[in-house]
Every structure is written in C-alpha cells, then in structure tokens.
Length: 414
Image 1 (spheres, rainbow, N blue to C red):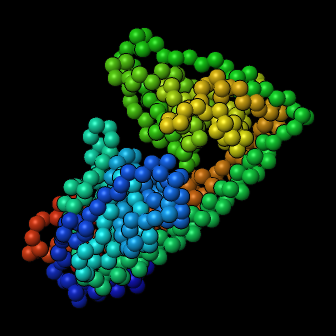
Image 2: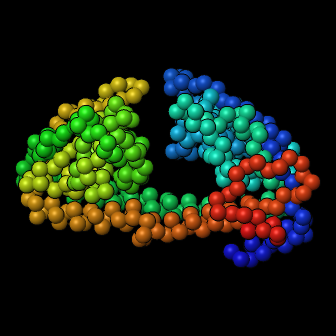
Image 3: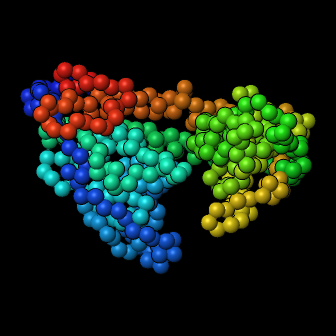
C-alpha cells in the first residue's frame, strides 16, 4: 500500500501543498427527505425497484415497488433510530422512506464516492440522542464541513478505498458461506429420532428467581437488556450499572453462570446468550426468558446450541403473537420439545460445535481473524487518506470532529 500512498502524497504536494478548502454539505449537495410508505403500500405496488429505509441489513432495502422517485448517483443516510447516521451509496432507480435523507452532488469537482467515504467517518458524531430517539436531520447534515481536495486526489482515494471494500466484501461472503455450512452441520448433529428421550424445555430447566429491590439497597448490578446481546456472535456487549434507585421496571430477573437467556420480545431476531462468570448474579430484563439447565439432565451448552437450531426458530416464528411488536411468552418457549441424549453424547456434540462456532465467530482465529485484520487495515488507511491540512484562507474553521486517532501532519497526510 506504500506505492498508492506515495502517489497520493505526490498529488498533494503538486496540487494543494498548502492544504485544502472545506465546504459544508449544504454548499455541495442538494438535500431531500423520503416519503412515508407503509407495508400495505409496498404490497399493493410490488415491483422491481428498491425502497430503502432506516435499516442497515440487506443494504437497507425495505421492499420493492413498481415505480421509482430517483434515478442516478446519490447518497442516502438514516435520519432516525438505532442506525441514525449510517451512509449508503446508491446508483440507479430507487425510492426512500421518510426515515432516510438524500444527498445529490450539485457542484463540479466533488466525487460522490469520496463524499461517501468521508461522511461515513464523521456523520455518527453528529447524531443526537435527545428523547431517546437518535436523529441526524437535514438541518444538521447540511452544516457538516468536509475537506474538498482536488478531484484527481479524490478519485485516487476512492480507487484505494474501493479496493479495500471489495476485499472485505469477499471475505464477508466467504465467512457467510462458512456460517451456513456450520448451521447445516449443527442442525444435523442436533437431529434425533425416537432412539432418545424427549422432554420440553420446561421439564429440563430449574426455577429462577427475581430480585427483591427493597432488600438490595446500595448494591450495584450489571443490567442486561435486549440491546446488550449481540445478534452476530451471541455475546453480551454493553451493559448498564443499576441499583435500587435507578433500576428500570423491566430489571427484575437474577441470572447465574451457565444460564441461557433468550429474548422473547421480537424473538425471531435471535437474541440469546450463555451466561459466563462475568455476569453471575447480575440482572436481566424481563424481555428475556431465563433457562437454567438441570445439569443432571442437560448440559447448558447443549441447551444453548438447541436454541440456535432452525427448528427452534420456526417454533418461535409460529408461536409469536402481535403484529407490530411481536413476542412469545416464557410458558410457550418452555413447551418446545428437545432431545435428551446421554450426557456423554451431549459432551461430544458440544465439543464439535464449540470448534465450529469458533471458526465462524472467534476473531482470534481463521476467517473472522482475517476479516478483523482487514477491517483494521482499512480503517487505518481510510483515516490516513481522509485527513487533510486546512488551507489557511478557506473561510470558516473546520468544525467536524477529527478522525479517531488522527492528527494532520505538515505534508497533508498522516
């Protein structure tokens, strides 16, 4: 990568040795918002043209209709919700919903993909979380200042970052294929017939308990809510420290090491985790069903892998209730029938599945490690490529937050 970096540095020395000018998004882009489109509207107008919404999965596709509002090269951003500030490149015929904003370059000398890459590094820092709903609206977006180097430099930077993006996408596709292979073998290993005993989850799980906050004064707990559990690797990430004075109303259930928790609110999102020693005797939301394995009958890890099977997913899908915000009751979850092979057989299966799981989820080995390294490399060069000295006479001071870990150097690239 030194050779491309040298080329960028030579272009900077040649075209803008004293720095670059900065302009606001409002100066260089036409800004629009999408329109309200319900699921009924999508069904009644089904077609081939994508409609993009606030989500980030599936490239943000909410549905497809038979007309389009825009045709060409644009950027969209998520204006509201958990993904607020996410930036996407669009090229073709499409529409957007009311929780999307739209940027169309309206001046010469600005490469749309360059704009994509640089906005992706700063837009999240302008998201406001007021009233509990993250937002980045048009009046905020239009004021963000970004560096505008000469077009030749923009194009060279885009070429380099596109290469990284392509390599990362290839690794992600290969990892996804591995995950599907793992899921197939996992379900095969956990498929049994009448040759083993069958019981319901309720029959193999012990009773759990709720906290008595009046008896727990001056004690801090880690609180696990639904958003604490990663849907990618089934690990617990961020938690909240709570006590009897600030505990949310749903902070009720005591969890112990080896408990399995499963999110019953919007259950097909697959929020489940196996509790380790770090969260022993902590608190989780009543939005989880807490399953405490009777280890004389079933291993906690075996129970955890059972919940990851497609059979359990289909059971949940068929038994959830509510249209807008579906959920499944704890009692219904505990009706799910599971096979109970001998504990020695459970141990053998768990050992195999642990190895498979590490190959697709552990960032220290295999493809996940390679993908993680590639992402860090991309972030390093992206930050290096997108940090510029400000031309002394370019007007308003640059007020966008600096890129993480980067400071400008005299030669214009860090």
